[in-house]
Image (cartoon, rainbow, N blue to C red; front, top):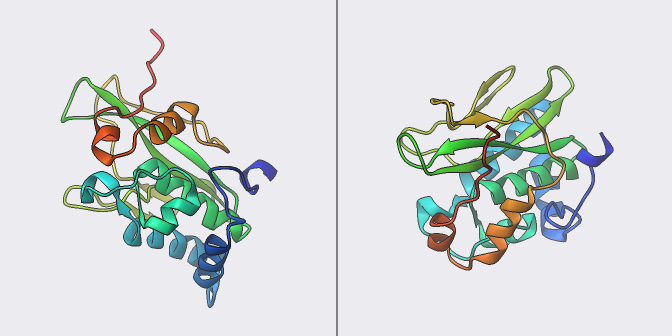
Length: 192
């Protein structure tokens, strides 16, 4: 579990602002689930999704997401992992492969989290941000993610990564505006 509790370049919870917000969210919680719910809802509801709100700058590190209050799903997942790890709750990163449109190519990765809950084990949560047609919730043991898998080329990847995928970091660090990221969303080709 150590790697799911450790700080890193992108999940930089040793940052003073992240530590302060993590402590604030933990204050008055009565259970692990209460703490996780608060962290999840803070990132889901208070950090605006870059594409939904047409916001710059493009963020990647958790501390930058918090500072600018915006991020793509990937960056928001970095912040949620940082807040959870700062509070001693193991958290990792997960990905789905989804159609960018209603169906078919092109495809892109979607970033979300897995958190280790003492009562349930690994449980996935999606703090991308709700909007019409998207309603992710925290209600363990049932996962209520933002997007269902609907077609053969889409995937729920089962892995739980301690660090962001290089293809995700590369896109977030290469492009300087939300619309350039939107035009170049990261993807992983599926094996034949």
